[in-house]
Amino acid sequence: MKVPGISGITLIIAICCGFLTPFDLSAVNIALPTIAREFCLDAIELSWVSSAYLLASAAFLVPFGRIGDIFGRKKILTGGIALFTLASMGMMFSSSSLVLISFRLVQGIGASMIFGTAVAILTSVTDPSRRGQALGIY
Image 1 (tube, rainbow, N blue to C red):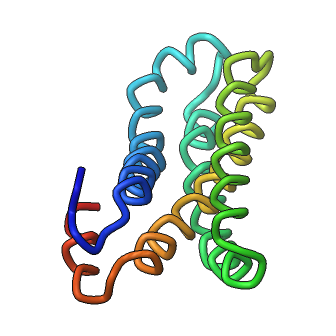
Image 2 (image 1 turned 180 degrees about the horizontal axis):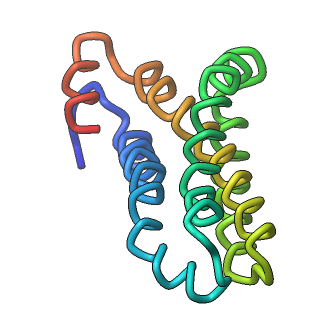
């Protein structure tokens, strides 16, 4: 994708990250009935599968944005992608609901690291005259 004044690779990475984090929040809702059957969860425990991700990503979004400003946005974004990926893989091998919810919490922390820095990186590498266009594409 070639847009003058906008870094193409950065835009693609930001778009992928911007899609990944909210998609994962929504996609797990489709699997909740199967998760409930597999782990014999009641409604309260099942609600924690979604809520753990949402609470962690909301609670850590602002702190990781600030940490990214201090220590480097690229480091935080890369760490967030790694943490999100490892937690996703860990969820596949969860043997109990507590382990599943714990990995979901860690996945939410990784999502906050991703979401808190992706837009900041995109705006910092984009020419000010093209920022609106880049954010619109994002």
